[in-house]
Image 1 (cartoon, helix red, strand yellow):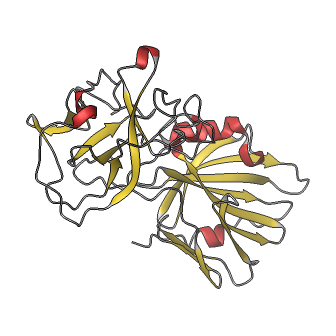
Image 2 (cartoon, helix red, strand yellow; image 1 turned 180 degrees about the horizontal axis):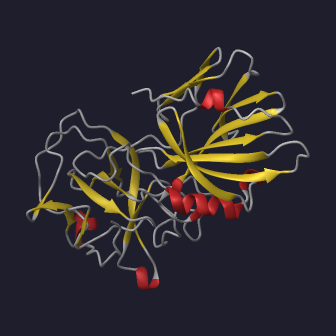
Image 3 (cartoon, rainbow, N blue to C red; image 1 turned 120 degrees about the horizontal axis):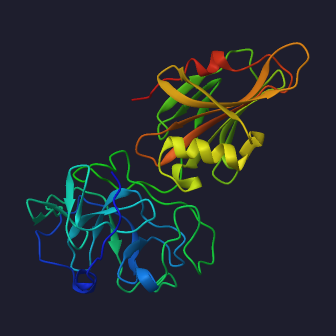
Length: 317
């Protein structure tokens, strides 16, 4: 599916290519950004930064971008953030400038309904002439930490449907013991005997937690590109190697289904003289978000494994 980037001509960056029907007011600009070039051997390659310091870029998706001539065109960015050119992605062709084409015709948003990022030619950026350093760190010279690459909302592998997504993730709402999260598209209900459901947030780094009989369940969200790959399998391998949440060296176990969802499972056997006990992580790549939902279970000497709550997981839509 992913292809190596070839040379991208600079002409369209200066003034855009060809005029198209002007957009209606229905389309929404999600954020200003800027086309940037690489350095050295990558000097003819392009990427699109959403921050002046280059700490966030479009990657691993199709994205509509309003160029300097006012026309919204669709481009494909690879897992490292480079525009892909002169190739076919999932049956969709891109030309020498990286633009989506059908039968040689550049596709534009003539309906004015696509959300898009706007290229701001006057965007003063220290990111100019910096190359993307993958999705797990900011480009060289960046002064702030990486906030992740941006994937489109649910339809990133179909250019005709690609829409820009809000950045970051959304935390859950809690009604009694029932958790709901439209962004992550799930609900779940803890038993009446379980502990209090604690809501976190982006700054805290987690969505919800529940402590029951000393056992702890935590749900959080991590970009699928956290460890340099773009698939759930590469994420799981990186997760184990990273040792996040004390699960370094965990063994990959069989997939497990809770309600409407199937998760990858890793686990580490914990010392206990009377029974088999494991700390576990369950992971699923959430459609269209570019994030993995990570559920961490620590038994902490308890027989509680939260299976009764996890079995209630359902899609909201």
